[in-house]
Length: 277
Picture (tube, rainbow, N blue to C red):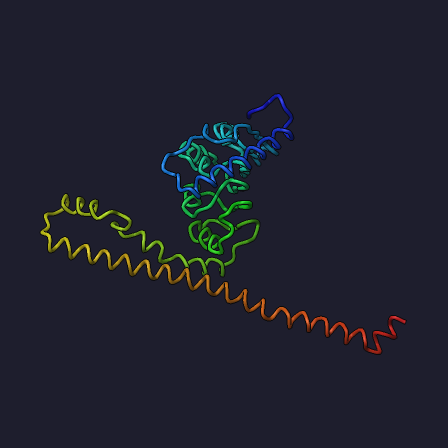
């Protein structure tokens, strides 16, 4: 990778410092809403990088070192890849995701410090069909309680998330929350502008204005119903999680008092005193 004239340890420190500056830069741009122009890797403040292979099966990539994904020997043997101080949008960029698909034995991905912040980004990994494990830390997406059910639902082949085994209960909860999400996306007209929908209808068959208006109302009704169901499930899941947390917070004081009282009672018992003596 880059910076062959300095030690790997110093290079990692340089990459970490560059990433901190890069994170502040892209965070400020997001806050300002300036996201229209697609950025390239050359725009990034992370210009140093390092990659190393461990035991022929574990590949570590730090900073600006994604070029190692082109290595045909790595594509044959590597089973796990760790990305640190690498912006997630660069990882899922079309050329790089195409290279990842060539890793025949790849089963696990690890992400740390990548500015991974949305479900849309995570969904870009769905083309890597052999994955059975994903680990994510030091990324803002992990602050939402829905990230686990989303990954469990969208990646049915995943058996481990953040080194924790996924249970059937996890899969059941994920289906309950996100099953209507697919229904929402299945409509051919969802998220299309009225102009686009109208052009498609004109090409398929001649329609008068009354018929076109009726179709538009039916489409809108279907989309609204699907959206309401989907959002309702998300709200229910979030409220249940919140209520359980609040219940635990309310009961914790009593639980603690019970433990202390039990300990004091045991300490004051004659058997305990005689054992101590």
